[in-house]
Amino acid sequence: MHRCSKHRERGVVMVWVVVALMALMGMAALTVDVGQLVIAAQVAQDVADAAALGAGRELPEYSTAQSVALNLVAANNESMGGFTASCSPDNGDITFWGANETVPEFGELGSYAWAMQVTANIPIDYVFAPVVGLEGATVSRSCTVVRMPVGGVPICPMWVSYETDYQYGQQQNLLMAGGPHYANIPGSFGWLEPPSGDTNLFLDLLSGYQVDYEDIVGNYVTVDDVITARTGVALGQWRQALESAPDNLSRLDRAMQEPWAGDTFDSFRNDNPRIMIIPMVEYLGGTGTGAQFQIRAFGAFWLESVDTHGQPRSITGRFIQYDLPGAGGDALSPETGLWTVKMVH
Image 1 (cartoon, rainbow, N blue to C red):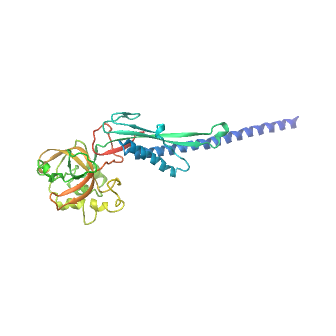
Image 2 (cartoon, rainbow, N blue to C red):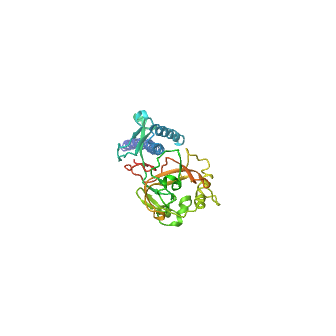
């Protein structure tokens, strides 16, 4: 009897061992499949984020924004470790919101703001779950971005009349006060005092080279700020800041160097030295250093050439559509000439 009892005990132990092993194997299998889902979810979110942020810069051109989003999703598939993401506009994976519409989880857009949502989908084939009838799943993640006006930035200390239309791609003479249309602004020749009041920073801000972070912050301006004129700027000074300098550090000198040498008006890096952010202002009154201007908007210009010999002298540039990464935006503000694309959820 005693020997039989021992055999029965061994048999019960073996049964429990088998049950425990099966449970452990099931947990291991579940861990593998759940792990796949977790990784795929993060990859899908990364793809959606990249596609939405890249495409958002094309708003309000919906067709172009959609093409950019689809191309970015496809491009990311080349480096995703075996995952393949898809995005189908026909299935509602790309959604747009226009001016004055309400974006879920964000709020109302103004007359000069637009939004889009991009969804990336990644199918997963389970490794172990099929034994219980589960073959796979599709992980979907979305990103919504808003393109909106920027109300304040550090500036290049010169001005352009607020009455100048935003005709993107059309050449403009940025040296405004020398022209006959601005004869009613006496004693100001197109230049502004640094907003911080540090007159020694004028040429640094004009050339846009090696300006300390503290000085950038100190010369930050917003729409409706009032700034004063700067007089006594010699022709050679602004030519050296913009066109040609002995140390080859003028804006146009640097633009011919790497990594900007291949940039064009249609395709450029956001930090290209040719890009000048200039206040679009309304003249309030005063003469000379007492002349006052109120900022109504901004112009982002692509600097093309400087003519210090012609009559009138000229600084030639063209308006560009320019997005400022990381800048603060306001979806309800009027057009300010500068834009930012913000991820909202």
